[in-house]
Image (tube, rainbow, N blue to C red):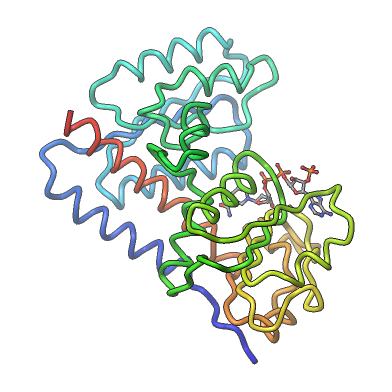
Length: 281
Ligand code: NAP
C-alpha cells in the first residue's frame, strides 16, 4: 500500500484564492497588524511570509518592527493602539518575544475579537466550549486538510502526540468536537507505540525527527505530521519516518508541503472572518 500524500501546499493556495475572491467583493479591505520585536531570523522569515500571504489575499498588512530592547509597556501601548484602530481586524504578535517581555501579559492584552491566533484565554475557553471566535491556525489547518480529503473524525480513534497549548491540546479539542474519541500522548506517556498503534488518525506534534516509525502505525491509518524539524542536512522534516510510513498509512501529510502552508492560510481565513465579524456589527 502506498499512502495518498495530502497536498497542504495546493490546498492552501486554493483557500487563499477563495479568500482573495471574497475580499475583492468587500467595500473595506481586511487589515492584519503584525508585531515583531527583535531580529530573530526565523521570526523575520515567518513575518515576511505573512506579509506575502496578506498581499496574495488582498488583506492590508500593518507591519510593526520594534527593536530588541523594546519594553513591555511599549509593546502593550502598541497592542492597545491596534485594539482601537478601526482599520485593523486582526492582531498577531510574533513569538518568541525578548526575555524582558512577558508573552502571556502581551497575548492577554489583545482584544479577543482581534485575536486571530486564538491564544487569548477567552478564545482558548471558547474553543473548549465549541464557541471559538477563531480556531488556532495550526489545528484549524489540520482539520481543513482532513475535510478536504473526506476524512471524517466522527467515531474514529484519534491519537494526538504532543500536548502544547498551541498545537496538541487545541487539535485534540477540535477532533473531539467532531465526535472523535481522542487520546493525548506526551513525554511522560509510557509505551507511546501501544497508543499510536491504536490510532485511526494519528496526529504528531512533538518536534523529534524519526519519533514515529512504520511499526507504530496501524495499517490504513491517517497520519498527520505537524512537526517542523531540521535534519542533519538542514532540510525541513517532520516527526514521522515518511517513506516507510507511506507503505502502511492510507493518507499522510508531507513535511514540507503539509500542515505548514495550511497554518499560514488559516491565519488569512481568521483575518477575513474577523473583518466580517466587525463589518456585521
Ligand atoms: P512543544 O511546545 O515543544 O510541545 C511538544 C510536545 O511534545 C510536548 O507536549 C511534549 O510533552 C511532547 N513530547 C516531547 N517528547 C515526546 C516524546 N518522546 N513522546 C511523546 N511526546 C513527546 O512544541 P509545539 O509548539 O507543540 O510544536 C510541536 C512541533 O510542531 C514542532 O516541531 C514545531 O516546530 C511544529 N509546529 C509546526 C507548525 C506548523 O505550522 N506546521 C506550527 C506550530 C508548531 P510534554 O508536554 O510532556 O513536555
